[in-house]
Image (cartoon, rainbow, N blue to C red):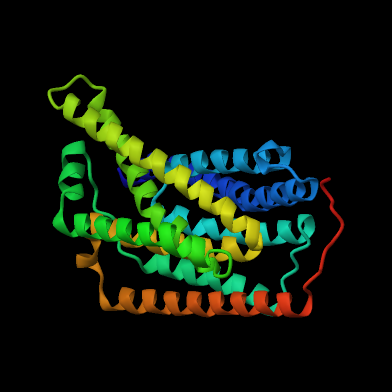
Length: 314
């Protein structure tokens, strides 16, 4: 019986892993291509919305996110999520070739530490309890702790977008990174819930109308979150290197998503001492990696303010 179960479940998991790997490489090219399109349009004096390279990066983002959605439905999140680090490393290599964003030794070490720390954090993060119906999801969404967390995130987003972004967005990369990462709390939660809500909303059962309302609410939340996130990603790429933004964004996005998931599914009740120490080590490694990236970026601006390379995609 055990052998037959393994045979039945292994192919979907293997497929999910392969989809996640491919999606990671596609996602790794997203910021590089969008940054390239922004630079090309700036050089020509036009809008990047009319640039083909920028649109190719946008298309890569869409395809990559669809791949992530498929991967999460085919394999466990604890297997899929660490593979996102491949996109960060691939993006760094691609940026060095297309954008000539050469990382020094500190920058490369910081990039690797960010990826390693995030993987350790994911491995030791608490695992989700299974939610099998839209009614269960509604109960979790209405939990006072999750409601308080959501209100806090919304308040932080308002402060960051209304005050911090106009005043400090162009001088501190963490402003744009924080906005995009906090929005991940809503995008990932909505993605997870849409599948459950859709099953009950379109089956014609007695609770279909209620599930349809939940489905539309989650879809609206997802759409608004993605649009705002997309806008601020491009604002960040207008002022910062894709290497630095992608590495820090991957770290903060992963952390906020894990936090939102832990609160929504009450996962903190299953965290033991070993996992707490593992997550602490992961966060410490990530913090050191981000610090090295910041030092690397400041050193690059100080010693090579006018460094440019051949425009290989013009």
